[in-house]
Length: 111
Figure 1 (cartoon, one colour):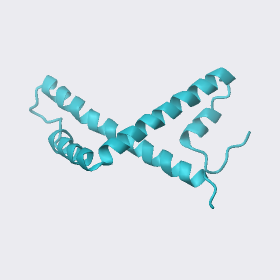
Figure 2 (cartoon, rainbow, N blue to C red):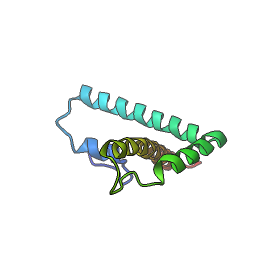
Figure 3 (cartoon, rainbow, N blue to C red):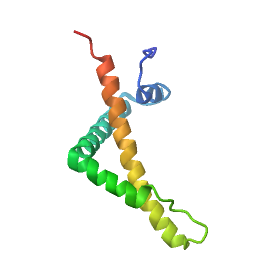
Figure 4 (cartoon, rainbow, N blue to C red):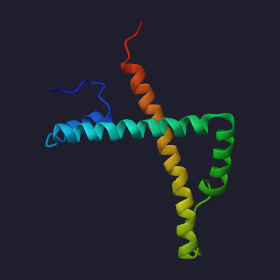
């Protein structure tokens, strides 16, 4: 079945895996829906007034400063990078929620 021009990244990835059984395909689709719902929860949490303030503070503490420096003890650098990664993950989840929301609103019929 040909893909629609506005197919999501997930739909394109699924189309490239024709070896999946119908049960495997349903499971992957369920997992993707759950991932998108979790991303939306992150978005709701961190776009509220308090959440935005906390996220801004966390970015100042752990994200905006470089975790890798020449004279850094390797264990300290790894710990800093781990903290920074949490913020990268939060940003990725929020972007996923934005993309999923815009894809859903574009696919809904206009009244």
